[in-house]
Length: 116
Image (cartoon, rainbow, N blue to C red; front, side):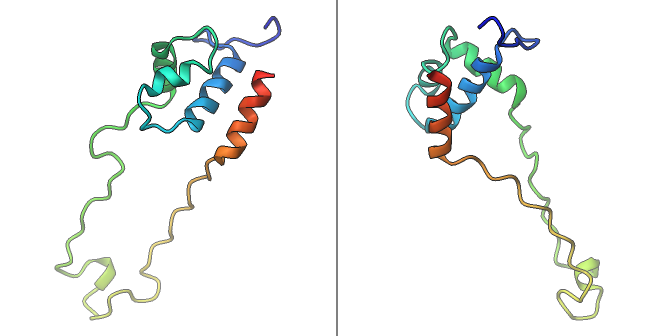
C-alpha cells in the first residue's frame, strides 16, 4: 500500500476502485447492500462506503432531470399553426446517449484482478 495514492478524503485508489467494482457487481436491491459492498473494501465499514459513494454521487433533488410537460395547445415550435405536427427543421437534435456502463462480467473480472 506504500505507493497507493490517497485522495483528499483519505481513501486509497485501490479502495475506491474496489468500492466502485463492488457497487456495480452487487444488485442495489439486495438486502444489506452496503454491508455486502463493504466486504469487498478491506478496512472500510458499510457506513464508510455509503458516505464515500454519495460524496461523489449525490442524490438528485426531487424532480431534477424530469422534463416539464409541454402543452399541446397553441402555436408552439412544434406546430407553428401550420397544422403539421413536426415540420422539417423543428425537431430538436437529440442529446447524445449516456456512456454505457461496464458489463457485470467486466466488473467482476476487474474486481478479481484488484484482489489478487
